[in-house]
Image 1 (cartoon, rainbow, N blue to C red):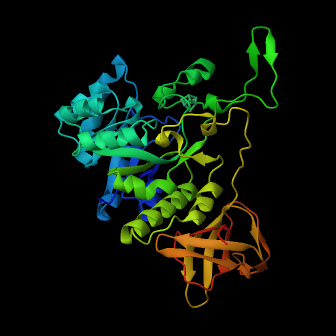
Image 2: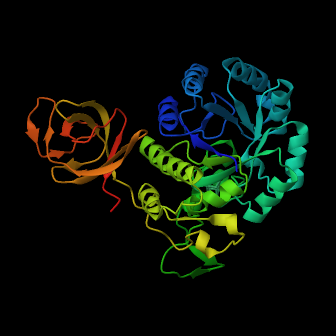
Image 3: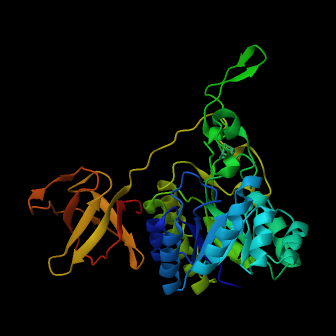
Length: 399
Ligand code: SF4
């Protein structure tokens, strides 16, 4: 039984550091060019350098995605981009286009085949492996049986699977809805998430009446309940989706999976499914989560089709900036409204989750206040339990 890598997304340098601090073994980021996620603040080479240094100092790894569908006019950029990344010392490049893959392999860089290739079978994996790639990120549509067969036939190949995050109603991004509706290319990082829009259906001249408008919207993916099984399956890397997610989302999801994986590995025979973690994950998402394709079932339970209620989450209350052990006061930067008497939970990379009721808050002039309502307002809050910089405060979730 091998310890899997927990792989986190990072849309910028700040998120990269949060992800490392909150338990990621590796992070994946977008480079200055040629990466998907046009809206994520892609990294400059200078930022990649800083991120790689930060990660390597802590024994963690950084992968750079270069997975757009490449056009002729961009081929000239590939060599210089790869050379620069190699010089910086990134640990691998995540690639989809064979042209980039060939050049990266020629430069003796570690290559991971991107999920954009929709690899779902062992012959394709073998092809990539024989080409020299180290790892294949399987398409999200891979089932348990398919993954097991790939693992059995290619024991040396690293296999990476998504364990958490949003799904795409197209096949791993190969969708042109966004191109048609908004002229934004989903395969070049511009997806406008058309599948989540509401549509009215027509059969010729006749509108098909439904209680709610139609949507293609997939539910999210969550493999929390399958962590032990996925470890037994020999999956090398557990990947979390979402380079554009907030630091709260990244920290919460990582913290939860980190604890589930580590608890299981510490004592597989006594591990019990942490049902309360489901609640934590559900609270920081705005859609339902299911196992999606893992069980080989592809039915209506995987999507919404008839509209959905997306709840904007306001659980994230603040970030601890510092803590004074003598006065037991924590300096807090507000993220959502909170007030005296609120039941909250605090957690962090080395702070086990604990709950408390807010009993004292003072503003920057040390005046007693009862509510904190301004975005990023700095206040001091009494916290009797020792906390640390970058611990997070959320509304109470656990009982
Ligand atoms: S519009 Fe929806 S299905 Fe198409 S690429 Fe974007 S997320 Fe995927």
